[in-house]
Length: 405
Ligand SMILES: Cc1ncc(COP(=O)(O)O)c(C=O)c1O
Image (cartoon, rainbow, N blue to C red; front, side):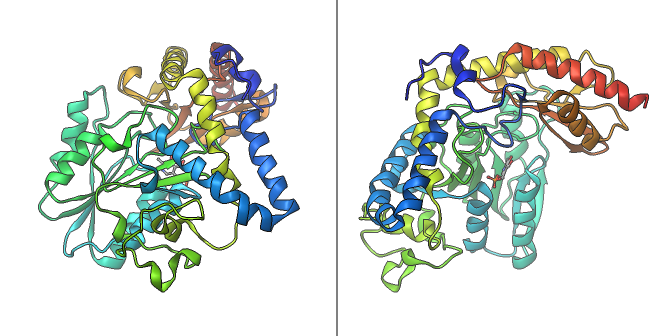
């Protein structure tokens, strides 16, 4: 890796076209050239001689990728299974767990829509009730966030699911403290770290959760198709793969000894059982070390501080626009450097997103929150204050055009 570890050079190391203002790392992270070249190189090897690559090269590369990611997120490698997406990992957890009924599943009221659907399906299948705890909407402390979850935990709560970082606003939840409270009450905790990994420092061994899932393809800037599932306290024997493949023979019962010992496949028997889904392309997983190297070269804390200054700048500029309000109530320091904005009432979110792209080549997420469009600014190390100014200017013109067609 040839990067000099400078924020100034970050943009030059990315593959983003010059004409594009990319402010959407929260949905999909673009790739540093080094990461792209690594994954493309692996795919070349896979294409040339799949047997040599899959049978002889992958095991060493896979264990290296696992230990590198485990080191980055502060956990033991034998508790970390790669997955294709957060959706796949959460679906496996949701399909596997046998929760006592009657009872309830508790979620925050700001969970990612598809994650909510996943738990709704569990509720429909098992008869468990789905209940939400409301996160504070305005400026709040970490204690307020903790209290919002804890005061809704009851003797009948079987599982709590929440985002480490809220996807619409970037607000960081006190994951370790919420999990501690869940653990004390015998409640299974599942943490969605989609917006935490690569965005804020994460030390999984300090979070007493049952399961933690994370995306590598967003803030970490690894290829699409790279995510992971971390098994915390005693959760491992409760998981069952959704696809039966080579890891799942009769001799591989989850409770049998040796489950956590590294094997010849770059896994452990327990991890291989969860990861192996037949023959497929796992090159994105193998390129994760390059994404980690990109982050380490600049520094996770340095990037976070920089992203927060950009988010602060976005707040100052966008809130100056008529009808636009910050939807992130908390101080920028309480976020992962992402900022949500409610758009003026009556303005169609889809039209704003389309026009920002078509007229200004600005890539930004615009969704809906109740009756208002919600624009999310998700800057990364490769963005600059100029990008934020271009967004503010473009948004002002788009809103003007939509008000007065
Ligand atoms: C909070 C959150 N959870 C889960 C997901 C789903 O992630 P994936 O697309 O990797 O399945 C997303 C995607 O944006 C997200 O923002």
